[in-house]
Image (cartoon, rainbow, N blue to C red):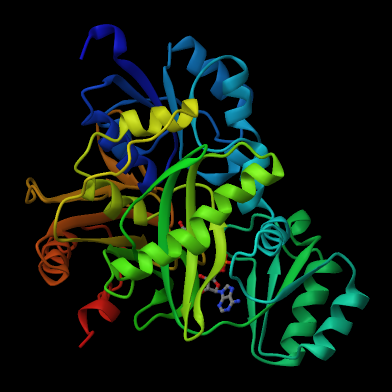
Length: 429
Ligand code: AMP
Ligand code: GLY
């Protein structure tokens, strides 16, 4: 690799996903230097972090220019939906992720559902509303159980699974009249309840070309047995035997390819991540939603499974250039367990000192999310999802044993984790 082709890479965000991206970039022969904004306590131990909010588009562009950045990797959806990639491209800096127009696939569920309908992509039957009266009329002909969704970004909280008609009516009124979820609830999607197991497919897209990462499954509920409140995700694993090679090929044909063709037909230039949240129903695979960034914590299991250098792939996507035909992956399985602060996703304490093991096995990694590092190097808790522990092994069972043994060696006062991550896959006959 000539010095001239080495890059300074800026990773934007502060979660476990971004720490995993920083680590993957640091491992690349193409990386001259990796920096992050705003970063977290773990990233601060490895790379220079710049304290800028992810919403600060002008500030991020100025930072990238001042640091001579050759590739920006955008972690979260908010800066994508605010047009960060458009702003970086305008000053000639390649940035991984879709521009604002493409990011609507995640930032507007109503836009996404209409996109699915227009391009015949399998999804739950639905209708979009901005007024209460027609929404209530629709509920009369489509009674509960039904799903009511705030169309805009709501950090995973804007989905109400209404088991009763009263709950459905209340959700419609809360969102459209009561200001629940603010502007994000000014438009709603009402859709059919689907039943089945959920799985995720992540594709890296560049114009007409795409490569898929292995299928994964996550655990969104806070409590064991997949009970309790929805969270950003308490753990994940890859691969899943529910998505066989045949099913993966069918998903690429029925979902990913029509989506890319749909972008072309609609005149949308889309480069970056397409993360399809799927429901595997008895009547085939249906798409629940698209995200336009990597999942968190899925990234912590997916990236370590990629045996190729990912930086040239992200750079090609950022430039809209063709991707390699396929990515290569390690054999075996990977799991990630989230260590949360007690109380998450409700209120939780901050500022607890975290202690770490001196050494961990080399197929395990501790990735930081809500942590802070002071000048003396002390790491304290600073968010709901505090850390995550990931590992790879020949089987999911061995990966889980390894990850949980590391989880037991990381401590802070209110530490909370689910002990059953991967239970569906581990218990399959
Ligand atoms: P979404 O943000 O649209 O993916 O929804 C978040 C979560 O709500 C999903 O991961 C599902 O667990 C659940 N969900 C969303 N839509 C539906 C649906 N139509 N039927 C059943 N569950 C759903
Ligand atoms: N783990 C779910 C998400 O990233 O949206």
